[in-house]
Length: 244
Image 1 (spheres, rainbow, N blue to C red):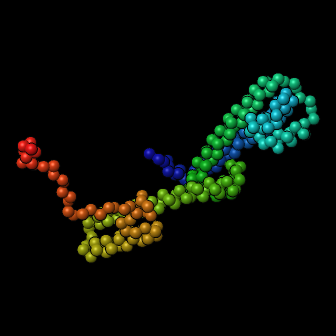
Image 2 (cartoon, rainbow, N blue to C red; image 1 turned 90 degrees about the vertical axis):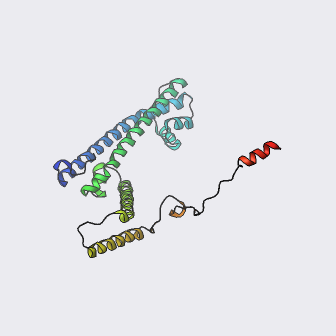
Image 3 (cartoon, helix red, strand yellow; image 1 turned 45 degrees about the vertical axis):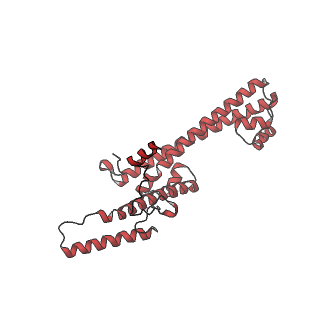
């Protein structure tokens, strides 16, 4: 059973505080990863310089580590301290470790980003705006705006499907049994009017079905006359063929 945002007797303010706590944790985790990345960047610069000094080209070092060639060239130009002499095999092993570490970091960042996107719907339910969400989580307003728009679009699509399905089921719904004949007629007319209004608002027609070209399912016309199965011959015809 899926719980709602105010399950277990929680108020809207209590749920909003919980959402803000999760958002703050996401921001702290992102800051820890950024700090670790900054510390690792010093080691990356030294390893790249050692690899280039050992005979590895700048293009290969940039391709293996995942950094731009211009960035690697800038590191080499700005470096003033002497580098340690290592073999080419050792240098390539160090570059491979840098590549694997960057892949792990990228996967962790994607997990954090997915967790942040998962909070967007709850944030919308408790009234947290885009600017507050971006400020607490540390993401840019542009990124958060795109997340909110994506969730809003999915919610609108789900609401549209529910409305259309409800309107199409309107003919099969029975009116309340306690109505008088006049009230029953009015109920049927209003239900049909609501159904047609929903279909018109979503650009559909009565009896139109989705899943085919142009939004309609083409049903082949069937003839009332059944096709006669071709005969392969009766007993008399088989007897005549044997006599021949």
